[in-house]
Structure formats: structure tokens, C-alpha cells
Length: 189
Image (cartoon, rainbow, N blue to C red; front, side, top):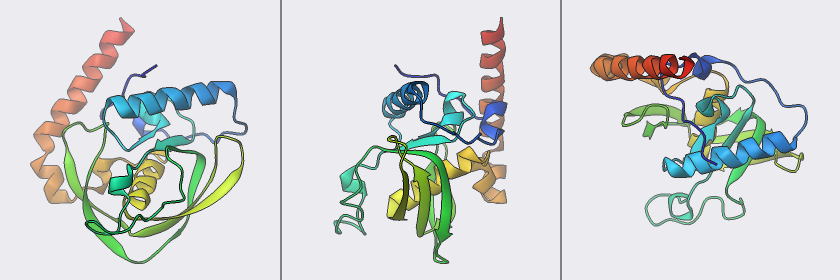
């Protein structure tokens, strides 16, 4: 069942995620709903805050054709089974190499901006089976992991924008925030 996608302006997006002590059936149902929501909105990643939950879980699904080194290059993560479910993810290591790449976010529909991120990261997390894992990530997977871990820390795409980009999008961001606030108010009545 697809869940409601939370957009910019809702305070839940700024809440730091609570760690998950045990993978319960409720969390597995949440993950199923998050994946369906991510697919409905054509995303490659989604954090719990984006569906109104304040727990530390995110889902990522990088299509094989986007998991490549350069155009037409070899797969970067052929052994990583997608979709990837990460409970309590933490970036354990970042390489110093930084790359600025255009990013979007399901909580900021229609908005894209260049974001600087490490080109490679190591992430530690608990998988759906409750097992601790570490994963070396490059390319789009590294970018998606960093983006979703940001969400779980209450850091949003707007926080990673340049000052110039924020100014150029000020009207769009204000309108999105106002629409979100109006939707929240309508739900409460």
C-alpha cells in the first residue's frame, strides 16, 4: 500500500530519526509501503521521514542501467541485491574526492540542484533480516546513500543548495511550503 509522500514544509522532515532496536513485522510493513511509494513516485530512494515516520530506515533501488561507471561502463555493484533496505544506516567512511551532480528529491517535486557529495562511502546498517552489514558504495548508490542518511538526520536538499540556487528557487520553495502547510491543516479538520 502506497503511503502519503511528505513534502517540504512539513516539520517531520526536520526530525532526527530514532534508532530501531528490533526489526518487527510493523517495520517490515513500513518498508513495503515505503518501497511502493518510492516506485509510484519514480524515485530511487526514500527515507522514513518522507512518509511521516521518524524512525531510522530507508530504501534504495538503483536500476542496473544507472549503476555504472561512466556512460556504458561496467556495473559498479553487481553483487548488491536491490532493493536495498537499511535500518540505522551510518556513513562510516567518506573519500575526500567530491563531485557535484544534479540531484532531485521526492519531497521537493520538480526541483533539481547540483549537490556536492563524496564519490565513495562506506555505510554500516542493519538489513531486513536483522543482520549488521557494511557496504562500499560508489556512483549513484553512494549519492543515494548520502541523500537518504541526510534525510534521517533532518538535513534536506534545500540545505545542500548553493545560496544562489536558494535565491533563484525562493518563490517555488515558498509555494511548496505553503501548499504543504495547507494540506496538513486540511488533514487536521
